[in-house]
Image: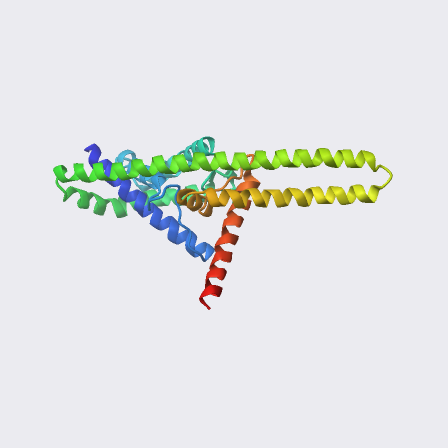
Length: 275
């Protein structure tokens, strides 16, 4: 099998995986949910899984063996991908923590069983049509098509990686800025408390104002950060990306809410001006 054909299969299955994920998750949440970690309409993990399914499971004796191999293989692939992306970008794109029989929220038994069934569907139901489609294209046409796909896909990977690294740096800077301001405010709070030991009510009020100050500074830092984000970063933060294990996970979730608030606020403002 020529490598250009394999890469075209990878792209086609990645697109099919994105379509499935987006439709399923959009229907589940009753709102548009653009799945995938990249800008384009493809989920590479589906492309890798499907191509490995075709290459490694085609010679297995029967659907039972294919099901078992795909179930175990998908678990390894999902866990490895989740771990790698989290280590690289401090973010994850799926979380099975709330589903029974999961392992660190990265894989779960029910999804692995579904992927086992999907392996049978791909190998016996979908791939014969994909194979006939690519077989009908001469190799001298497949090569430029594969090169075009590779150029677009590679550029997408580079842009997404750069945006996520920059997003992590922005979140880290926002957290450090808030911590510094809180530290300065807390030092003032301690000094005031020492000078007013007899007045416990004022100390309590000062402590409450410290918590309010923190929330206000967090919001101000995130609002400032939102204005400096590019389209790729905004798309990532509004998508399924999660910061559940990062040290600034709370900031990541609050940033998503901040972006949603500003989008809604701007929409209402625009409608008011039109009226």
